[in-house]
Image (cartoon, rainbow, N blue to C red; front, side, top):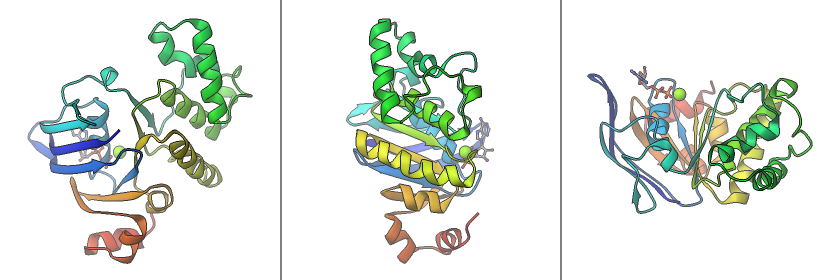
Amino acid sequence: MRILLDKFCKSFGTTSVIEDMQLEVGSGEMLALLGPSGCGKSTTLFAICGIHRPTSGRILFGDRDVTNLPSQARNVGVVFQSYALYPHMTVEENIGFPLKVKRLATANIKQQVAEIAKLVQIDNLLGRRPGQLSGGQQQRVALARALIRRPDVLLLDEPLANLDAKLRLEMRSEIRRLQRETGITAILVTHDQVEAMSMCDRIAIMNKGEIVQIASPSDMYNDPRTAFVAGFLGNPP
Ligand code: ADP
Ligand code: MG
């Protein structure tokens, strides 16, 4: 599903955070929103998933204008830095929760959970509780829970920030594999340029609420258009 931000603006009170952003993410594409802390990446993602309303401008999924729709009506899957799993529920219950809310039959939920759990390779952990899982396993559960409703769009906000270096590497290719296998349109918010470079089809570099350059990883690397982009790519965090 194509995502379009058309003249997207977001202010908090009198403070303008995003001004007149134009962004198109192609169907099946994985795009990184890359930039320093505070540049407006999460604000943009929150507007796409429906947590924040734009101050002005429009958000389209395909041809559907979702600007004024609540999160639940947008069919988005979201994964944040902190996994926010329900500690008292098993892995199976955590993953199935969005379907339980929709009042699907138990047998149906069980079957769908089994399918998704296999896809993210945690089908052997369904009886455990989050406290009995590693960080990487918990993040896989969060991914499964985001994917269970077969969303049109997958939104990832610094999903690997809490993982150690080895797991981060493993989950980079894992998330990319899932994105390719499902063909889902995805946006990855990150301040880590290596992560953006290695996982995404295109990168939008943001600074102070604006997209300063948008290009494929190799074009971005070979032809940074501004000193900001060159400096940001050249200085790993
Ligand atoms: P990033 O995710 O790139 O680190 P954010 O989108 O979280 O940046 O924040 C961008 C700017 O908007 C920051 O200056 C932040 O303080 C401000 N901001 C974010 N959310 C709010 C809010 N709810 N109220 C006021 N200011 C906010
Ligand atoms: Mg953020």
